[in-house]
Image (cartoon, rainbow, N blue to C red; front, side, top):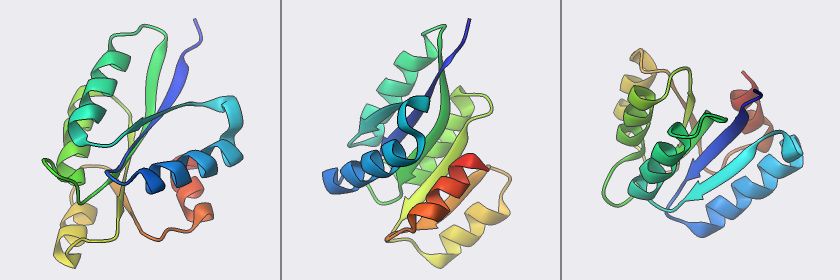
Length: 128
């Protein structure tokens, strides 16, 4: 059975989600299913639902860092506990450089990209 590959995008700003949607669709078309959440809590619900579907696989989770409730790096760590071999990308415009250094030094497997991001760089992180 072929798995449906999912990319989950999380940001509390709808304009960022819309931008991600258009860039992902332009670059990958129908190769992936795209899910969008405006909070970490909503994203975890989507991820839990996808994890319970036999024909679904979470390929990438892209999350903003600064969100109400739970920071993006905390969300991505939770995702990595739930999902094997998932790519995780932290998208940020507001983060302390010390936090970035800690994330990049750690073995948590989280890659970082800064807002405003370059579309080619984002696509390269997903394809890497």
